[in-house]
Amino acid sequence: GVTHTISWELAQDVPSFQQFAIGDLLLSIEMLEDSLFVNGTGTGQAQGLIGNTGAGVTGVAAGSDSYASELMEATFDVLGKLNAAYHPNAGWLMERATSVVIRKAQQQANLFVPIFTHEGGKDFLQGYPVTYSAYVPAIAAGNTPVLFGDFAQGYLIGDRGGSGINTKILDQPKATEGQVILLGYRRTDGRVRRSEAIQAITLASGS
Image (tube, rainbow, N blue to C red; front, side, top):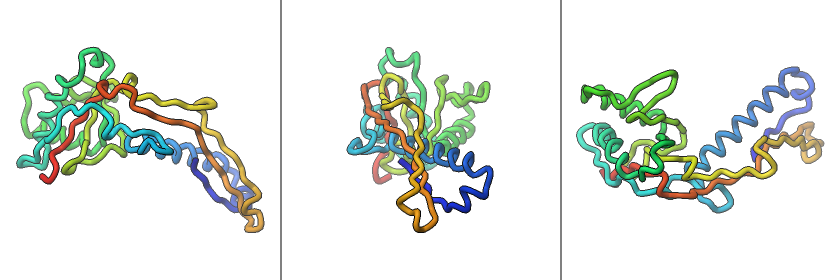
């Protein structure tokens, strides 16, 4: 869970505080879960996607433009690494900055048919939808900045006691200090269910 410690004065004197605090807790928990679903160890926390999916395309070189053109080429290659059964519901997962690098490479290559498009408020790469997470590794030697596949089939998220985020007010631990603790939590876990359903693009080490 995630906690906030607040003063009695703030809780009592600011009419909008309750709405603000709950919204802040919800956002904090969502960000925490996002980071664990991507990079979690699986011990006492969710198992992350990074390092637990199909190998996909490995050893992508830095080239003359810090991985940009080679990474763009790798988005073609990884299509063939994913089993056909997973293509109908496949999509991409990456950091937004990675998409900018691919788009710049596309512009530099002056492709006859653009591979990165924006339609109806949604980004598409190679015709598949793109989802962004700030916790997917950035473009750097040895990192895995792009995942491609059917995440619904490949990754399982389970919530106990419903998917809602619970909030508890702990008014006794810090009562003598004139403070209360707001605790927001959700019992959830995540595991890679079918590693073959999600393929990675991994950059060469030491480039």
